[in-house]
Image (cartoon, rainbow, N blue to C red; front, top):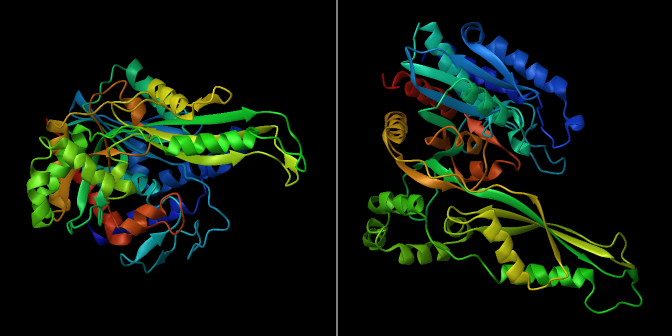
Length: 448
């Protein structure tokens, strides 16, 4: 890439970050004008893309582009989302979260702001790759679709509509690629090489609300076993009743691929991970919460509510549970597990939202293409499958494709990964440029 194109993708991402496209479950609270400005900015930054690709609007502000290739037999979908999560006004951002300015960082000069990593960096990288190839007169070997959602952060409908459009047109993607994994540094204890983690499945996301009701009243005359006490006891019982642990196949393959890169005493264990699955599972459970989450369904108590005043006994107490459902488990099984753990029929369990785990995508030719591109652009990285913990729009595409993967081609330190949905989110300028280069290579290497 030339200095001009390098500068373009950087300038483009800066411009996108400056537009606060915050999504919300309540459509009336969404700034539609901000999304309109973002779409106009995309057209300004990437004019050839908008001139040569066919556009279908999906959802309130989502985009589905079609780039006709030499063949339509093995179409590819490249995904990203335009919306971002809100910024906590109390969070100690070092730089304006919607400034998109370049400042020094732990990874050198970086663009700072909400969405740099999640997920406007992918939007800019994909568009830059397409723009460069159009400038070069390139025709992709296969049809390429760009699916940019506008409500991913709130589990909205734009991606569902995109899937509907593709289904109506008889498109069965040979490869779907969304955000998810990354070139992750410091991802595993004792491993100095970064990991190019490709999500081949993702946990399901389910939200439950526990509700206890009873007689409220004045705090001066409390009764035993009131709603608040029962909710507190239920939370404690759930915490003491973890889901069974068992490392799924992608996690075992991840361990096997790590074997040559871990300290010598661990190599025999990880090298035979598939045959020593119970031992590997126990090792992951002992390695900390991040590793443990790779082995089981997890439950986090996220919200609590009760009395509106310090001197009033609550008549209703509630607790919200965010549950990430492991591959092999089901939402129905999760609800039953929680019910048995609580062992209190007076507490109502409401399913607020639910989503099953995604199927495991195969490690065949499509996966190998992603691996090869990682090796070409990031030769220092160990490419490997993994189970993605968070939910993405890609889960909807499993209805029309068996090959759905989750990978963002950006180097990310542990601190950068922790900044996603938090504060001080930033992406290295060089890392953004390399990400665009990776997307370009992926399109160039599509099989005929």
